[in-house]
Image (tube, rainbow, N blue to C red):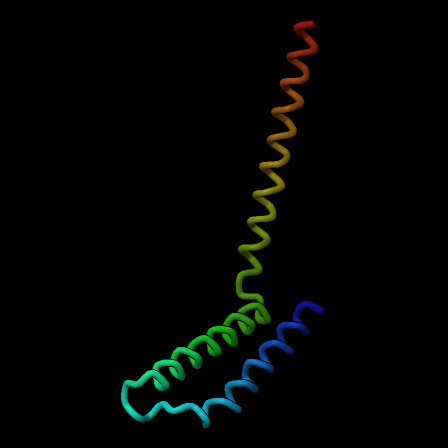
Amino acid sequence: MKGFRNIIYMSLALGMLFYAVPRLELGQGISTAAVFGAVWIGLALLIVAAHLHEILGVDEETRKELSRIKRMKKWQLEQTLQGKRKVMQFRK
């Protein structure tokens, strides 16, 4: 479902690009309209690239590694807390 949502959003962004690029005033020097058009196209392409990156799953390995590290830190914290409990029980 997550990949399908990214495909839909990327398609919408591409559709906006195909619709808007012919209507933008880009070839008339540096004007407010030309700067707006260039920035708008850049942001739309950034959105498309982000969704394509997510669809291709480029950083899946990194996500798995971070998940493994988080589990390890949680385990270490649990071990530390259990060790302190044992010491407190021993002192009583």
